[in-house]
Length: 104
Image 1 (cartoon, one colour):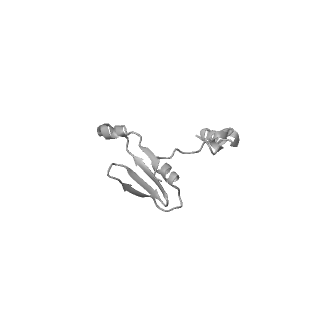
Image 2: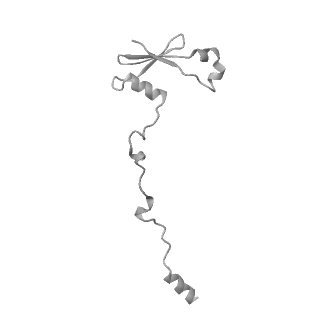
């Protein structure tokens, strides 16, 4: 048993750390600000279109299904697609794009 204990004492411990240069060069695309953009949802795009410093966005539903979004002096109308009005069942699984236009 002494020989096994002395052999274990002579072998170095297992080193699990990697040398500093083992990671390799960093991909320059990761540091490019254009590559780190996120795709924004409809709400974020509408908020950017309406502006950000004019206060909160107010929503107003009109009788024909149109949604009027206002912020300050800016206004946008969001109209449902005709396809969604004709076939509302498929709207739940395959929503159609809505039309967006300025109120002026």
